[in-house]
Length: 141
Image 1 (tube, rainbow, N blue to C red):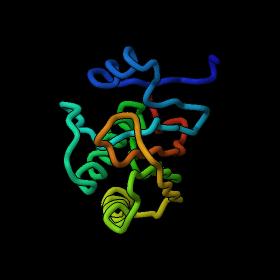
Image 2 (cartoon, one colour; image 1 turned 30 degrees about the horizontal axis):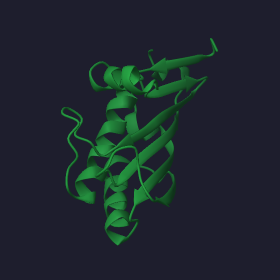
Image 3 (cartoon, helix red, strand yellow; image 1 turned 180 degrees about the vertical axis):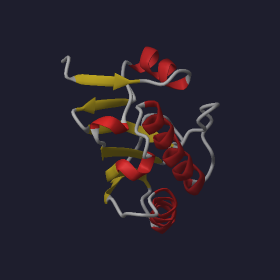
Image 4 (cartoon, rainbow, N blue to C red; image 1 turned 45 degrees about the horizontal axis):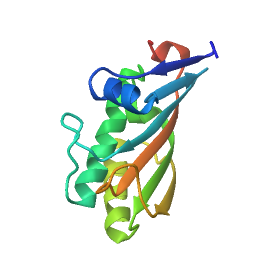
């Protein structure tokens, strides 16, 4: 698998890699795929009480991983978003649309929202995966 370049940022990323044996991102040619990012606080891992806060954190966490993977355009490189929601409702949809407009002001990526019965940790209500494309000179890994 030498054609795959994995990225795991220091700190929480390394902790998750050691504890759960998964990386945060992989580059395949000019495509970057980001592992599902939840709404935990990026510094502490704490879970905020509201769906809106968790979704905002999940977008921030995706941004952190994109940067760690070397995607200089950040969310500007993202063309596909897949989100998973416990209790998918208007609060979740509204929070997602708000964050999509904030982080992707110049384009509207593909988006699929899926309702699920649970996520990896109790209290989590949203998780986001993204796929992006970068030019060879836009990324330094």
